[in-house]
Length: 117
Image 1 (cartoon, rainbow, N blue to C red):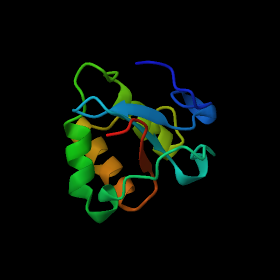
Image 2: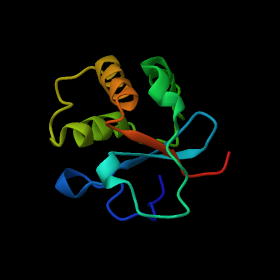
Image 3: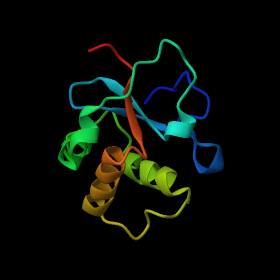
Image 4: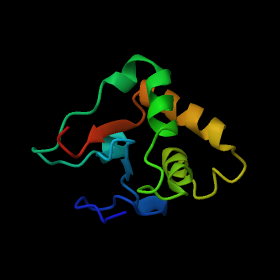
């Protein structure tokens, strides 16, 4: 996975400002909290389809690109959501996906497309 042009994206711990994920079609997306959203006027608006139902978020995370994403990406996003380095240790992948999808629906996490689709 390439480095992001936004500071703090992809880091671990308290300095993390979000993570990049590649969807099944190869488009990059930024997953971040609303307070950590980069102040870039050219940044796309958050994808509002995830606000409708958690099912869309679950499908997005389950069908993520298999080899362009890190195997630990869901763990990193889950830990980022909870501000805890070891929050995902006891969680199964299905439980993390459900929790992350609910956080998309509740707007605790934003999914911002980085590539034009």
